[in-house]
Length: 395
Image (tube, rainbow, N blue to C red):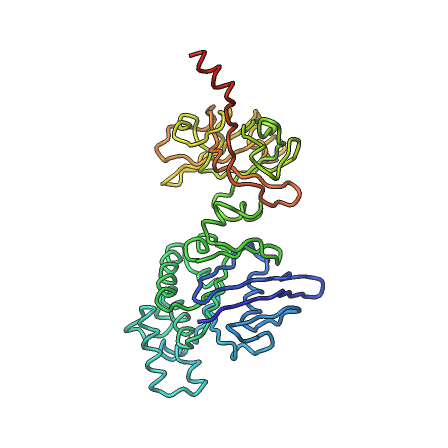
């Protein structure tokens, strides 16, 4: 096992900056996933760690060793690629042991390591099979076993499940978690699939345009995103975003208001333009308001499109009189739409007027210009003593 440290790592290709001043520290035995959209720099970052790409600036340490200029074979890493790349003319044993045989290991050592690796990835009894006699998941396990026999300090996995079908990917996610628990080795994993990132990782490093946006445990990235990009990228379906203006009573948008106490938030002032974010599961039908700790006032909406998912229904809501698609084919903007998640047994139909509420404790505010998070959760106004006295008198 080894700690991996990136200090001010930058990688440029002529006028393109693939990795921009990356600072990252991955602890011994940690499972960290690089996640982000295609072309964000996550694979390039991994390649600089592996030694396949030399950084333009910065240094990389594995353990106490500066490996910035070392070749891949001297870094103590093993890599599993998206392309499994097994030798088709070799059986499983020869594929797994190929690297060890190149390094002239003793036959006894090779046999012991291959048997252990095959046991870990559950390939017992398959060592004499050829790759074309195996399923996609089994071939991927062979590729992982080939990395295990190296006994590396760090495993690097670049989208190893991308070419598998959906059911097999779910199964292999479980296998990789079990592998990490058994080996207790540092694993750096690259994916654009946030489900893989959320389910397997100790921490997620969210990357966009070559820059590290946030590195935190999965639920922290989900519940307390550092900025609007992270909030929109982590979570499926994506968070709702609505532009608005802070008033003395809360937030005013084009189609509804959310009351809260702006004085309880240090980084906002009346008149500020902000972006409100709320996840679909935090938008509720108004008849559930009493079950929420801090429900907003009811918002008038009309159901547009329903997407039954089995365990839930995604409901697209229109907040004004516009249709979801105008006569010229343009789709309605996010400012007049909300996405809501409801229970599968909810009695709801398309083109039906509904009242919905937001769970204010789960509403996020972001700076319009920088996208940085301002707060996670809104507080209600505290009732004044005078107001309480008047209410009691009315009773």
